[in-house]
Image (cartoon, rainbow over all chains, first blue to last red; front, side, top):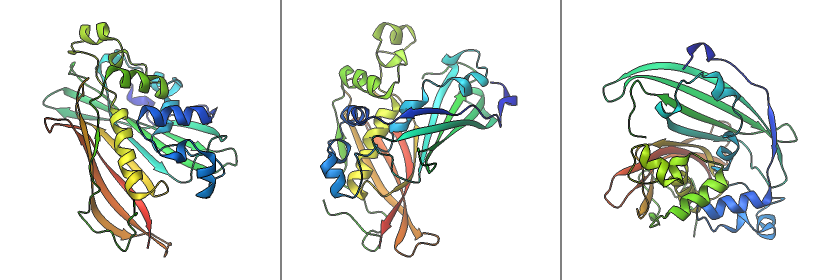
Length: 151
Length: 143
């Protein structure tokens, strides 16, 4: 990875939170919670629409490639997704339009007996809704191993 | 389910474990479509084996979704303030994952007298007791 990419920020991108996607995601993780499906149930709990499950937003981080391209990884088969973190500030509802912005927080090095020299990149994505409220921050940690290890 | 409050919850409290599976290739494919994770190691048997795996294997974030459900079932959908998932090992078709969580600390929420914060840790282990993911979370609970 290119350590000089640390600190880089990227152009914001926008995406809608669709009702069908929330339900599809809840089905895929086997979560039967009616808050992810039933608008009337959500209204009873004080929400204007059905709500996004806690790990949904990772879904929207595969396509934007600017931040991962900036890492200048030579071979992605040496990259392991080590960690994924979310911070929650406000609920995300079906019908919201979110704006996301990526930043490479840090690229650090570490020695590992099992995998040789490691480079560890943290990419942070800040999500705002259509009212400009910060709703969530996601941080993913990508680890480049010095030699190929089991994924 | 009666939800704990900051007053009633204590360090080392834990919800009943959530058992998920046996997981199948169909679960992986369904999660691939829902989550946009199209890494072929998770859906393409030929690719996964060529890459040194015994078969396709599950996404760490699928196990993360199972654990997030354990936390929201236990603490409520409004409670989570932070969630961190650390990927430890692969899981395979036919594995059964058991998700567990436990409280590690109780503390005051800055500037909010109506809520208190708890920290907890969680993990998903396979039928042999091997950790697939582990993580930690912070939640705000009413007093």
